[in-house]
Image (cartoon, rainbow, N blue to C red):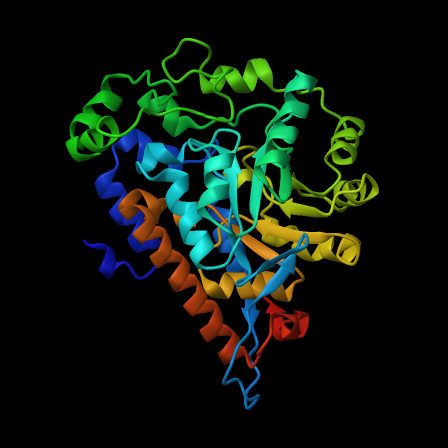
Length: 381
């Protein structure tokens, strides 16, 4: 299978599976516990049908949106995800360049493998910095100051990860950073020598946002210990309110799932929230962002920008979310599999397909602008 034969999410996933050693593929593909929430994220879109309008004169379509003060050429952005250069040596560089080309927003993670500063130079599109709340308050302030200096437009605090989810696929292969694979995991690496050659012939793998705290060589701390030792499970709304004030700009909470928490986010001055269950990787059995979208838009949609992620694989999924009131939709695995399969060319092909699908879907819905999408064009089964 080659890149030009990839026409949807599942094709990219298959190509990535061929290229990646099993432990790395399963790190991307896997989720928590029985992976019920992971599957529900996508199937939730199937409980809702689109109702198209015809004869509306749709020769041109404008799919641009403004979210948290940022103008995006399309209503989909690349969510921040960790460890991207583990999947392909271009990593965040490929994602930043592709997002820039398509005029959309991209995120760099605290556990990103390219620095905020370098990513900022690659793309002129809006940049999000996704970070975690540390026990060391000085480190939190230092990270915000660095992001401001780098020209990051939006701070995105992940609030659903005060402890790591139970990802059993990783336990079976022994996947960890730094690598501590079991025999089954090592055997799977041996079967994919091309990945190993690619990995070892490019610059060494590091975490520039945290390089003084987490060491890829195993010296300072592993990523699992980073979550257990450095992140602060005692974080409260008061702590976050202080950070929002300190940042003084666009500030988003990722991992909000209730109307009550959405109202609290408004109260402390956030400008955006992401309805997210971390791609099903944290609390298995939790609802999907799409299932909670209407309830939360009804509660706070006129006061704060409501975004969602989780399970988005098609342009029609995006149209359903926008019709319910989401301002934009984040994708993760949707671009990670193409990244793993083919680097920047893969991410660009995935974003191009999404753009074409949204444009085609809007024309078939009889809409020339995103704000013409509404609940009137949806029916729930």
